[in-house]
Length: 149
Ligand code: RB5
Image (cartoon, rainbow, N blue to C red):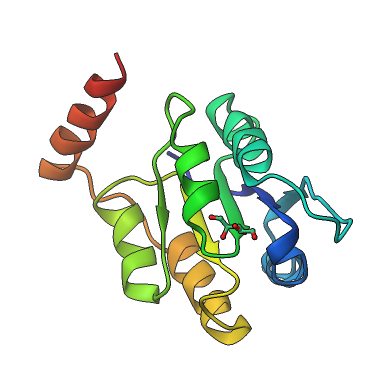
C-alpha cells in the first residue's frame, strides 16, 4: 500500500467521545478523516458500526479503519467478518505497530473503557506510523487470506 492517507472511524455509544478526539487528532496530522459516527449517546449495536467501517476499507474507500467500543473486542469481531479485513484490538503502542508491520492489519480496534485518551493517542500514532514489512510476513498474511477463500 502506498502511504495510507484516508482513515475511516466508527464506534458504538461507549466510545463516542474518544472516537471524536482521535478523529480530530488524526485530521490535525493531515490525514483525510471520515468519521461515520454515531454521534448520539443512545445505546446502539457495535456489529453495525464495525461492519460499516470495515466495508469502507474493504471497498477501498478508506486505506485504514479505526473502530472503538467499550472493550474494542466486539466491534473487532464484527469487522473481521468482512472479507479482506484484518483488525486487531490494541491497548499499547507496540502491538499497534506490530499489527501493521507483521500482520498488515488494515483496521485497529480500541477499547474506550480499557485505555485512557493519552494511551489511545499513542496507539493510533503507532498504528498509522508503521508499515507492513512483507517478506515472510506476507506469506503468513496470504495464509490468512486463503482461509477466507
Ligand atoms: C456496550 O455496553 C459494550 O458491550 C460494547 O461497547 C463492547 O464493549 C462490546 O464488545
